[in-house]
Image (cartoon, rainbow, N blue to C red; front, side):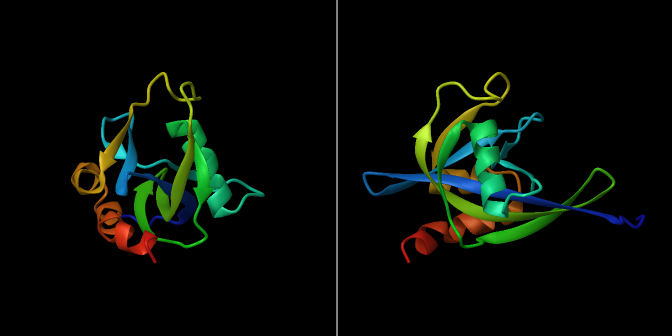
Length: 137
């Protein structure tokens, strides 16, 4: 394996809401058809949480309060380097009918157990397994 010298910092949110006390998670489809969470490069001048919130608005058409707490991290190879992704939770307060990437993104709410099996990244599944307990603390 060749040495990857470039490092990119990304942030992501797990959009969630409670309906009648039941936790639901919003996932979006990637261009390749995998179920993912909104994420992107941390933009200059923004905190990781602010940047992740912006990605949720652009990619999933949702807005809300992003946790201060870091729920986890993972990394993957992309752009000839390593992307390090910080994951936060976002309590969804607004859901837009029209958003920037609605022409190619599918979004769908899942019960937590279903979201765990649908999401493509193993580390996100692990975070989801503990999310309900973490949110009630």
